[in-house]
Image 1 (cartoon, one colour):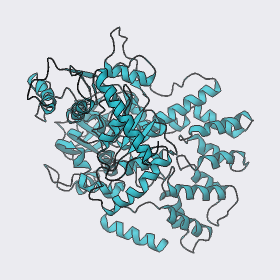
Image 2 (cartoon, one colour):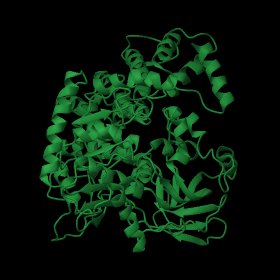
Image 3 (cartoon, helix red, strand yellow):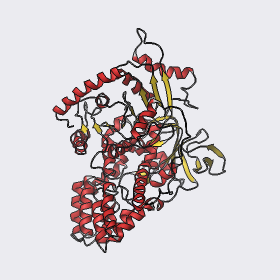
Image 4 (tube, rainbow, N blue to C red):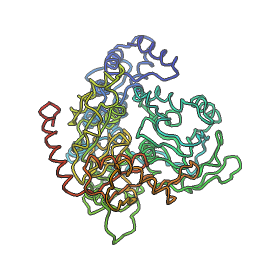
Length: 630
């Protein structure tokens, strides 16, 4: 195994990338070597064990956790791995297979202090909280320490605060950067392999960019982190792989987690909503401001608390900005929005058990001004998913996700994110996986994915389509329930019934695993059609009429400089077409993706919805009969 892996290291080095993490078979071989280490290989073996195996519920993590647990409990021994170090390493695996052994070790007199410290900084606890609670109630001192630590949010306060000043070097990309520039579709096969896929970022030469990787490495020689700066950033498809590529060059290594990075800074004159969210999820600091005065290679000082950017050498003010929300700095400190949400929930749960008030450690989203006005259709739908009458714009909420869709070009990344979340079962009502992009002309890596991904999804309670079944939207739409909320890993996941908020693979995985999704409720734009469809007018005419009307009113501009887009990040709420068939309504909602809208609703009468649902029931019964699962 060592010989093969060293050969792999050399092959990857020739490509200019780090080696892949160990798989389950390699990890099993590594375990045997650590039990009886060859002379001179001790340090290399321990480094592989600590740093080159994925965390969460990856198959290799299962092997690693089992071995470390056996060593920690004294069931297996190694001349180079003491029981204390094995227990420490269990605590670096995020969650999943390592949790039960760590909780067991709270009863081990020697290992309990180390296990307690490890659990105190572990967030992916989920239902295992009850096991720690039981031990605490039974008088276990270390279990009490763990719950006290969770209630004090030590997992958060032990991390450094975002500094008052960040000094970075500008990597400037002029004009509009869409996610296909950062994560090209022809290279989709390599997206799960983040270091390799990152080499395709900005591979097509453009103004000021000839070799992005080389230029970024040259900028790093100035001694500061590099920030991605662009006029318009992240438009187009909802690819977390685009964020992964940016952060691979500009983010920070995550201790003990191979081939992933977090953090970094992204500044845009305009940042597309989904790309902004995937940056948030990854622990980056994204914000919008006027970038006209920033050029490639400039060194700038960012003052995140004051909302100002200055030139590093002379203090000249380049722009002022406002953070999307004060919570953003907590997200950066926690390592991302998702860790913050999970950790905050764990702290709240521990404090409730201890009879304490809510923690004041975290910044909370501010209350929106009270209003006596009614709610829009979108606000009512999201409100229903949150158990209230409606949700006002700019309110933070976590609506229940009834429907979650995953397609194949991002599906392998969603699978990896689910493993990182230690997900062994879905909480969302419906999780649907498709194979619509790779079925016609599959590469060898796609064929492997076609065989492995369906079982992964179905074993967790999801539904998997089959290669050749067609586009995900035509299936997912047939499974929708009216007035519900969902998401999907494709920017065109735009429900004609209910409402969807498309997202990157990290947020899709979170929604599938937990059944909820974090949302800062967007504002809405009312799009009202009047009169009746005239002969010769098509749905495409109506789709085009929406941006045309905005252009005429000056609410949408084509020039990238000072770009206006009234739809960007907002919900299009379409009225005046109540008798459209639901399939026709999808053409309108689908086109909202091209407007960079955050979501879309279409107000329909009951008759077309009733007809659609009755037809869909027949389809679902056929799918169950064909063995798709229910």
